[in-house]
Length: 442
Image (cartoon, rainbow, N blue to C red; front, top):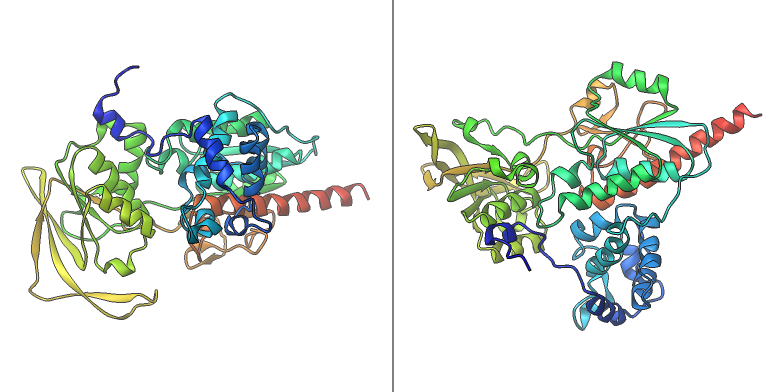
């Protein structure tokens, strides 16, 4: 076996795949509950006991079909879903022993067919209707796959060089390698979806063109860049999203920093910190509130601690320090918590005279993402900066639907929720197109 350099191993997928015996043994632990709580906890309602039963009986193809019928991005979700909060968190074995490793079993079944290029689904009989999907992230892939199986002609437009959106560019390799995301793009292509990269929707005129050429349009625009902090020395900040993207696509451009500060305490901040740590840096995360107010999942926080990543709570950066064109540190101020702010969390305020410096040679900002500014440009109604949609994912504009992070005004943005958005939108678009077909035929 070829020896893999330590640095390369450090950025390989975190959990190894199950072998056949390991998967079978784990599957046999499942109690196959009637009215299983894990199914209810899954936003896409995968029939988990059934797919696990099929693994136990050696029917991996059937198991993958059960998964992918409910969630076309089953390979991605097996890796990135917060299973501790969802299916595995609801497993009845939690009270007595370890929950079933549902995510890893799902990965075992889906990888079995996708690594072998097995096509489980076919496009439906042609309906004569055409749909444009903008954005090839999880929501865009999900709605495309559903509509193609219903017989509609789908054109999927992606502004970047590679399809897959967040899965390809925004999830660290430790959780999902690029090739897994690209396999799902290929699976959509196999359903006849025309995936066109290098096409960006930028204004209302572009949307009007799509509406003139297609019977419906779905927008899976995602969110924007990391917002500016407005502090001196900001030009030296590394964008957390770009840092993660570079770690997957262009790892050679990442700085060889030895002491890295990450600003933020959400899941993206943890991911950026993990990459820096795995590259050998000493990493400190700065957060202006306390551990209790962190937006990262608890298991992500604990994972970061286990990686040796340090935290400084109640700490607000106020200036990036540099000399000779190189970062030398971050000037910070201590914070205290006051009454709840508009978001309901205790509002942080600076403690006068408490300034101090955290030495470092790189600073990554991961304090969230900007809301989809394009929504206003397109003339769509927005809610809190997000695209407003009804229960069928329809926007304020006729024949225009949206889903994924760009509509997530409430709740937690996640891949699995975006996949479910795509399913809801596909059902609604299909109803629309079917009704207009019936009207046309009297």
